Image (cartoon, rainbow, N blue to C red; front, side, top):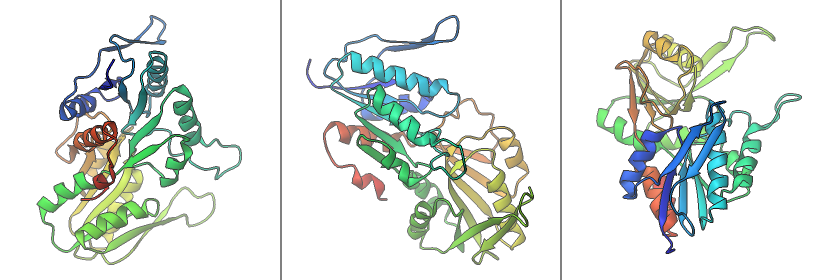
Length: 312
């Protein structure tokens, strides 16, 4: 069989996989990812992939079945003699335990990286890891894309004056690059507890935000608690309009409801997590990263550099 690019999708984010497939110009290969009557995952690839350059698109966030689907698809592809298998993971779940910062806790991000390589992946393509060092957890080549270009376009069109970029202390490098493109200063959130074992946290802003428009930049919004408290602290310090953009919109629990009541004017997320079933208000907008992943897949297949995708 001639070397040919093929794409397979799991069930975690089928809408994004279809957009990527459309951009690449290659239809999604037929593969059945279903359940036995007891709930166990059943996978069958329904077309020949022998010798193919195969890209499996599947995020690993909750529920755990998403990770299992990816591992079983990888094993099926390996046993079907695909020439090279790339795990395309728009949202790398289980990334928030990336170090042993307490006694008797796992490093789940490394565990999942080991599982993916062991299951048959030859390389990984992912986006905005929760911590940059997770890229080094993989013992196979890993390309780490950044979603910043998608958000640049959106916020450049708003043409916000007196702009400041808000940052949590966690993802400073990503936020610094974001601020650099807008040629504007940063404001950093300092969070500390007033005393040990007290649940109430104290939020302080380092930087001048009075009379400024602020964009809070982060990689993940889950329950939205820290993001909303950040926005409230900005408001107390005299900020004008407050926006937020987060790559991975987990939006669990009452996040959407709480976002409605928050000072945040608009929350912009990407479609690395499937938002097609989300009952969102006008406050939340979803931008697609399909073009970035599609271009990275095309260049990987052609053995071309993808470093230019990191630039605007």
